[in-house]
Length: 443
Image 1 (cartoon, rainbow, N blue to C red):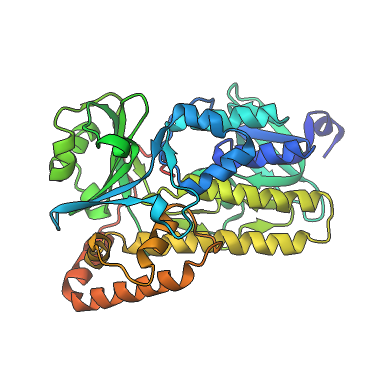
Image 2: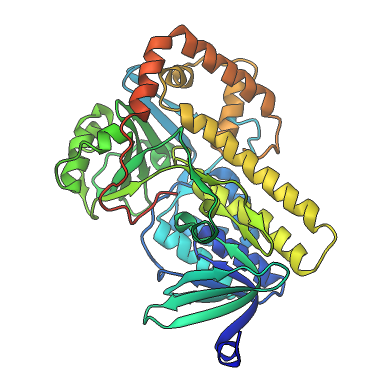
């Protein structure tokens, strides 16, 4: 850098790119430890985002951040998940309290605009410097030295930061992957979503009012997520061949898709769309590595998977918590840095792999048959509920029951081989390259 450049450069210990749940969590923990943390967030909060259903095992992390009471104020309590199959003519309610580890029997449904703002303001209160309306544009990695990141504010002014360590928490923007490469689309799973916020959606009764409903239909699956203010998030994650068939405006297409699923249509008969209809390309991807010399990737910046088990925020919080230990060790030149980095990568990958297997098979007839079955042996159902509750990182003895569940799945798949193979073909055919308005990603 020449003398002119140096005058315009802001130096910091940690530069976090992205102010969503992952970035805000990382920034809060590191600022609390006394590091000079800068956060670049391209949007201004509050802003709309999808991914509104939290998992029980996220609550201890929110408590650690000091925001649990605030989240409770904006959320409706979620004790479990209803799965609905018109193929079987019934539904099942799965309660988190029946998981192998029943210590976290509930979570919350939240509007992400409110939730994300709580986390962002919390990291500011802890001492992080947040720059909203500033988008990272270019990175210059200098092995063995500090990293330069060039950004642009809402007025078009170019700003530069020199950081000892960079955290990519840019979500589906995948900033660092876009700069240095390495991101690969998952060839085994592609989908896209259409969704909106509604009023007048019929709710479940009693203590189940706040539970998420997940509904299978011929072209994918639906979510129904109630909010505390009486409104509801409703959306369909559909396979490429169906999404590519759209010939009408998006809001009309959403209503037409609702009509194709009788259980959803019945709950929506008095509903009114109160937001715009949104669409989001939902292609799964992963980067081969999640760290390098002076940087780390957390949350969706490293990998993204389908939102069927509401895992996005949970994976973001968990990777940020673990990643903060790695960054702190690096800045302190601690001898345990390499070990913490390996542990971080192993744990994050284990969680992603656990959810990915369930997601890739979720819409198969064999999976529906097992989920709708009321017979469970060897604590298989309890182990599956543990995964649904967010215990996917090897902290409890779920491995053997989950292994037995997978064996049962493949046996049922083989027993109805033709039906399951045709369902697999329908899911993977006709992958489109674009999908209209894809500005709002699912997490």
